[in-house]
Length: 407
Ligand code: PMT
Image 1 (cartoon, rainbow, N blue to C red):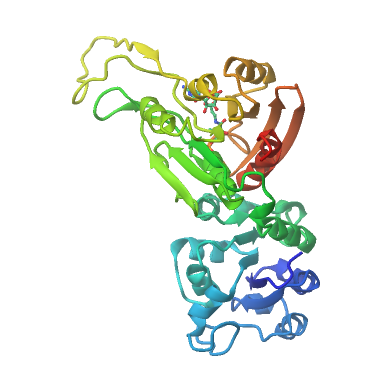
Image 2 (image 1 turned 30 degrees about the vertical axis):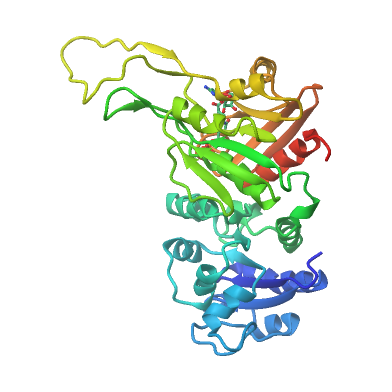
């Protein structure tokens, strides 16, 4: 499964570190070469000798190690990042997560993270007390790392070493290996390989005047995750992005737009040639009829705003597409309402609709996780439970691939 793959396992100082010798053994059993990098506090929780014994290599710790895997003619801090086929950080503590996001380079693990070749996958398995995991700074840092393309493996719920019970336990080593195998799966097996895919993502802004706009809470995370996964499977991906604060996924051509009209203009350039169109953007259905030049001045009067309909980008693609082109939409509601999704499937002439609910906590806008109900034209319904948006993107594309015409 991982035959010949060079895996760097970064271990941080958390109680779950005691599970890492077993994780190393599973990687080795799957055929991988494993190099362990331990932060200073990791070795308070797990013995260096155990890790070196099961990995068959000395554990690397400090910044100034002279010997390790890779090209002998280069310095260690560069060769590690070149040698690795993947970097797994398990358990990842709040401290290391913050340091990675800040770009610090003060130990071998953080240096390796920065020097890793950009096309190599990074899997981060956070483990910590539930309150720490839910804290705004940890959420923000994880979100930013997910935005850079790292796969965040959500911790599990249960009894925690802190004495609390809740979310924060590191997933079992078997689950980490499974996730890594999926990340390293060769794109050659995907029906998306070589296909042209257009993904819309994020919100649109509809100007009221030169300093104000109408918009929504979409962060772009869902659409960016879909674009990233399609590119990983070998597709040529054009990502038409509304105003979001996310890094462009590796290998994706990104076109930034602001309004629904701008999104339509950018997307329609690829209508003719794309094999698959996925509308994950939260496009404003209406825009102010007459945006004002400069800033609207306030007075004592009430103000009435006249809105006009925006173009339906996905609808226009579906209406103009030729046979064989596949059209996939999302449908967002704030509660229940699978009937609305079915209605959108019909009205927008989609092949598949992904229905999601924005609950303000684990699904929909802004958060790192989501849950989808997929509905196809034959009426098949597939429920995908709450999981990280990166994983969900993979499950969505698994369902979309069979809809593409055979080559
Ligand atoms: O960006 P995140 O914070 O990660 O949140 C993800 C998400 C909730 C935005 C995403 O999962 C999602 O549901 N996107 C679609 C939201 C939406 O606008 O749904 P809708 O039901 O209004 O639109 C239905 C479909 O038509 C969507 O595919 C939409 O992209 C498309 N559409 C809508 C209006 C319009 N004028 N043009 C369109 O193309």
